Length: 343
Image (cartoon, rainbow, N blue to C red):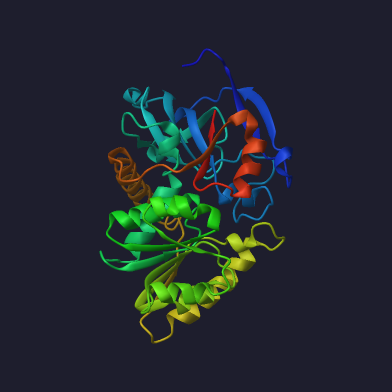
C-alpha cells in the first residue's frame, strides 16, 4: 500500500456552482470485514453528479458528501478475513457516491475484475454507461436488422449504446447537435439534429414504418414524439430525466409525471411497450441477484471493450484536483463521450 497515509477527495458542500466543489485531505480509510480499499485510477462525471450539485437527484446523501458514481482502480488492501489474492487486482465498481477520491472503501461483492491491459480511463467509460446500454438493449428484445432511434447519441450512455446496437446488427439513427454528427457517422450512426423542428419527419423519411425501439434519456415533452415514432410492436425505453437538469424542478416530480404517462400508454391496445429503465432496480429487494447480474453484465461489456467491439469515447481527461474545470466541461457537452477524472 502507498506510504502516504492521507487521501485526496472532492467534497460537494451544498448547492454550488462547479467552482464551489472542495478538494480536501483526510486520513486513509481502513476496510472492514467484507470490504476492500481501492486506489482509484479513473472515475467519471455523469448526469447524476450534475443533478446532485443542484440537490435534484433522488436519494442523494445529505450535504456535504463525496460524489462519484463509479470507479476503476486497484485493490490495495482487504478487510479482516478477506481474500488476500485480491490485492493488486484491477477492478471496477458502481457505488453511486464516493468515487471522486484517490482511495475508496468498496464492498468486495461490488467489485468486478477488469481484463488485463485495458486503460483504466477506457474501462471507466463503460462501467455504468456500458451496463445501462447492455441491459436496455437486451430488455427491448431486438433482432438483427431492426432499426433503433437513440436520443443523445453523443452522450456517455449514447455512444456505448450505438456501438452495442451496431454490434448486434441493428440500424441506428441517432440525435445530437450537428457538431457531433461526424463522430457519430464514424460509429455507424445515421445522425439527425435533435433541435430540428421537423425531426419526426426526418426519422419517418429514414424509417417509414417507424422504428423498433427508441431510447430517450430526456423525459421531456419530446417523449410523446418518441412514442409516436414506434413501429407496430415497438418499444420505448426512457432511461433518464435530463429535462429537469438546469432547472429548479425536482427530478422526483418529473419522474412521477413520466411514470403516469408511461402507465397510460402501456394500457393502450396497440402492441407498443413502454418502460423506464432503472439501473438500481432490485438492489434492495433482491440484493444478491442484483449484484450477480451487475457483475455478469459489466464483465461482458468490459470484455467487448477488450475485444475492440466498443471503442471508448473519452470526451476529456482531467486530474481529480481540477474537478471544477472538468464539471464545467462536462456540462457544456462540447465533445461526445464521457469526461474522466484521473486521481
